[in-house]
Image 1 (tube, helix red, strand yellow):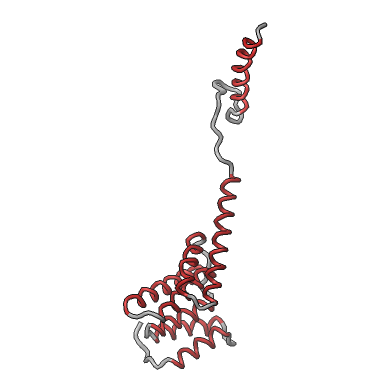
Image 2 (cartoon, rainbow, N blue to C red):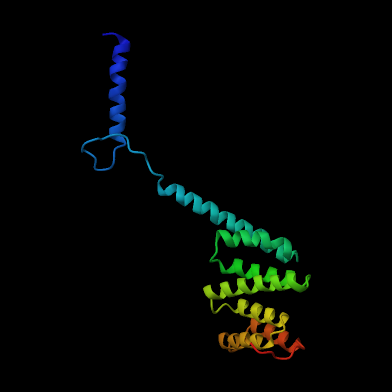
Length: 187
């Protein structure tokens, strides 16, 4: 038999066999043609791992910049970490702190915008972790900066109930309130 004729007969048979190998599971019925493969969960797992790694890297960079006092530089990294991992309380704490501290170098509307961003981050963090003492301390200090002594005292009350025998966060907010010359204001 002619070799090219043999190859010509074999190629369609091979293609039919290949189609049967990729047929839908349990296939044995009509058609048996090629079915495109869907990505397995391995791809999704790799993507999630990459996003978690990126969030950790951005958080580490942002936290390092905060520790260096470079609050405005830290914010984009912390926002990227928060976007990749929106329910991370540590990221939200750093983000709120960076916004609050960046506001100190500003005035007017720019300062108010930073305070609002800090408030949003703290509230988001407390929604995830209502008993987070550090967030309550920072929120109380933010209220003091906004000349809202009443809400700051409310945060102190929360800390007093969370750590009845005292804790560093409670002490820090008590000292901040005592040092604040702003009279109590309405909520």
